Length: 337
Image (tube, rainbow, N blue to C red; front, top):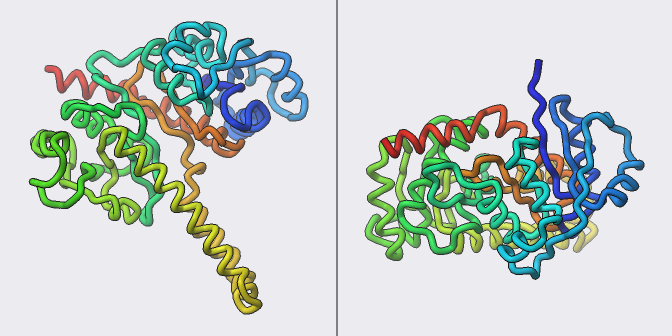
């Protein structure tokens, strides 16, 4: 008998809440039999929206939370003061063992703060990194860290590499994933102080496949499976990646519509082009997990639509089935011995 994975979802977080969030939850429940979703937020609003859908009523539960944490609030202060917010209430479900994972499109700062203050770190984890899968020409790579630790130390980056390797091997199925550190050149002597101090530590790790430095231009070509950096660099890479991708798609569309001949060509190549661009749709891969916590916390884009919410919930199921936290704990224990 399949184990039921329970995912708490912040129904009030994000630009498209609650409609797209609830729709995504329904899609996930209808897609897999071993998912239960707890929608956390204003009960009357959630109940009204759920009436628009058909689903197994036993597998979607509502937990009321009257408060919402906005993006312009100080994250730590909001977590401490707004005890009845959808983020705090949902994370307490993980803490008390009532949920296996949490998904939110709400305030990134509040999700990161709540993850550490409420869910808590696995013993031995110095800093939990935020790690999204990003599309490349050869599949996907894990960008770790993209937003949680802007002032990381060398020991943090070494842990990121180890955690990222576990994730890529078990979730994506890449055996002995290639690990690289983001740098301004391929040479070992290049980089800022953090990179120069971290490089030899990664090089001496016997439990990861460290291949050296990776320059930003090589990331879209799949130059490494696990891309290690501190959060400031990682966030810049991620935002440029997303912005450039959207700009190129708009430019391609404009070019295809510019003349009669190009419009005919666009019509003939539409299906092939759509299939190709689908590989670079980040929403296919779900959200960014905050790795190294006592339970899984996944942050999705603030403008997430139902598809990304659905995929983020399914991502939680895969994470749980592959026992990622248990494998991270084992790796940390081995490191400390």
